[in-house]
Length: 150
Length: 150
DNA sequence: TTACAGTATATGCCGTGGCATATACATCGG
DNA sequence: CCGATGTATATGCCACGGCATATACTGTAA
Image (tube, each protein chain N blue to C red):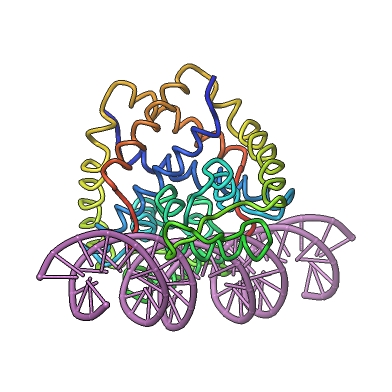
């Protein structure tokens, strides 16, 4: 039996501190923050993605996602291309600058994670923790839990 | 060996969706959100806490914490009491209304967590996951990782 | 075709956090 | 005690997300 409130507290604190620390490194090295890195990486790995696809993946509102893309577009890292099969939406694509940025930032990100938690999360208990989080995530997504309004 | 980027992604997605879902329930039932519940619970469990104690616990800036207390004070749930041993700071205390609120909200919170993840996180692997997160948290806190500027 | 319900995105208002700064107080060395 | 430095908090400006709404478009059915 697990102490759920305690587990939740640990989960949130870890997420907060890791996100903060990665923000520092990414901002310092590349002028972006973690949420932007995650957007760019998603666009690199899923060509043809639309705003709604990002919103669903990250469980944020569509409006906020649209504004996030505005900012990335303003920086010249992303472009909205007309979607031939549905003129309400746009296909999002990385520019060459955006591609270069995401690849460079990925090194910072991966090395940062290793430095931050590699030493702590390498035991055998770590694999089971990772498996538990992956399973929890898939259940939450399957049941649409915590999906924002709009 | 753990896929750290994948683990981090799962961690952040779980945290986002759980936080969103708990926000919905707490807002609906008590007119507060999860971060406010966490503040109130902390103040209940640590009498004599100051703004800086909250900021350290939750890894948020002191300024943001001060503003958060402003809002709770405006609702009549918290009071700033003069601190006899250091006039720069105040001792934070729950009002009777605040105490009542946090106890009621705790039921919603605990039951909500059980409904959201109790079914998924009750296996034996869950305990080791919980242990891993607790350990990671303590290491991050010990090393002051991700502690905001101010 | 036209009307209508549904969908994808964009935009505005508001609340909230980060960060820098200001202010009040504390502490230490002389 | 005095000045210098450090600490605790408050406040202002900015960036960002939620949510509601507006707009454009799609698909369906008559």
